[in-house]
Amino acid sequence: MTNRLLYEGKAKKVFETDHPYEVLVYFKDDATAFNGVKKGQIHSKGILNNAISSLFFELLDSRGVKSHFVKKIDERSMLVKKLKIIQIEVVVRNIAAGSLSQRIGWPEGKILPKPVLEFYLKDDALGDPLINDYHIAALGIATPQQLEHLADQSLKINAILSEHLLARKVKLVDFKLEFGMSDQEILLGDEISPDTCRFWDAETNQKLDKDRFRRDLGDVEEAYQEIYNRLKG
Image (cartoon, rainbow, N blue to C red; front, side):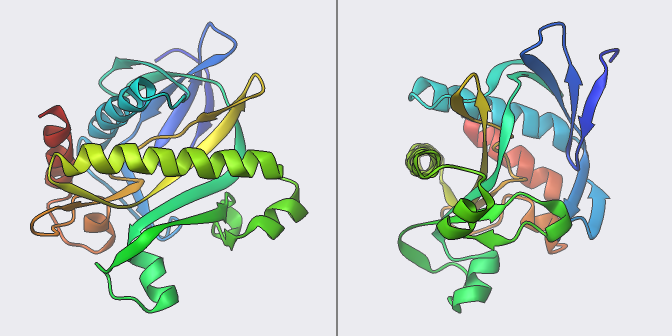
């Protein structure tokens, strides 16, 4: 790969291209958890996350959700539109799990009566803290109109993905989304994969996501492969 490296994160590298408004995203096998405290590698994770994210972006595009995705280049790389990232992580929750269970005292696996939307400040140094509309206004990181758009798009994405996955016997427990600006338009960015979503088997509640790495459950690569297999049908 000869293009200049623009940025390297925990799971991906971003390279410049010959097009000033497009970049190449390369998916790594590196895995982290608990804000980078736990580190490791998952064999073929980058290949699977690239493939899974590409399928999800193509699905969302067919349903009218615009994203940064242009096309899959090879097994580890996708071409995307360059975004100015909005410093908000949007988390959509359908079933109590993870930090939500700890915060509200609901057992993991309890179905929420309606999707719960949460905003987190995208800041690794601060541990990506939970924030609300008032914090966002005080920080000036999004206008009320932009925040409303993020919420509407996130709930639309949730409905599309939940239906699509349930038909493949997978529950979408919760997931994280990131958005950015491209020529005054808000687009979905980042990735949609077992790294950023909680996927459970619809019949057994077996975890098919990065929780297998977080909790030392084993068979991590097999879980990622299973999600890809079900998406491919």
